Amino acid sequence: MSEAAAATEPQAAALLEVTGLSAYYGSAQALEDVTFTMGRESIAIVGRNGMGKTTLCNAIIGISPPRAEGSIRFDGEELVGMPSHRIARLGVGYVPQGRRLFPSLTVDQHLKIAARGASANGSSWTRERVYELFPRLAERKGNGGAELSGGEQQMLAIGRALVTNPRILVMDEPSEGLAPAVIEGLIETFKHLEEEGLAILLIEQNLGVATALAERQLVMIGGGIAAETTASALADDPELQRRYLGVEPLAH
Image 1: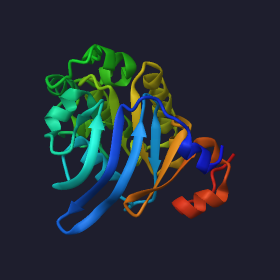
Image 2: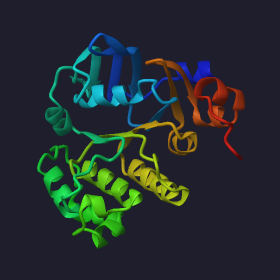
Image 3: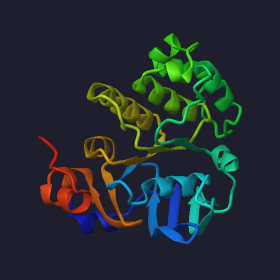
């Protein structure tokens, strides 16, 4: 499918709708007129470092930047100006870049605390279900965040988001710093979550992860959405990979 066709293909009824979003850190503009819609399907936003991907996550979640203009609607509800705890209770889960775990809290304590702010959307993610999804966390439930490996920390960050019972999961660079074998396991986990009906907005610099999870690919350059394409088109076009992402072509 061509980029133009992908950009004009009708999507399902919007669960997340971002329209004309600009965001600023002081007087510095980090996002400019970002517009896209997302239905129940997973999508990936790819781009180099410094292109505004994390700022977009922060704007959706409501934790920063301090000034945003435009509209972010989740299931028809406007999120711009809403505090992050209310956004979470609407059903927006977040797995931040770098995990952001508390070193002194155990695995079980992380999950207990996160579950207190669970949304009431009919989902049934509990600590027990998280331990079923990630048996390794069950084995390490008494260990502190600083005692976990990188892969275990990422499992906990995902589990912490899941126990809030989200309808959409925003994940910022989940593969960062992880070994290839761990990444492969996470990709299978993401596919399993999608099969259960959880929409995933994946922010990724790792093109292999992005194209393995989502067919819709949005390319972010200079704080804006520069193009929309598909996983197959992006994976099969080395020149597109170099032009938009500055990466060497994916190995086949």
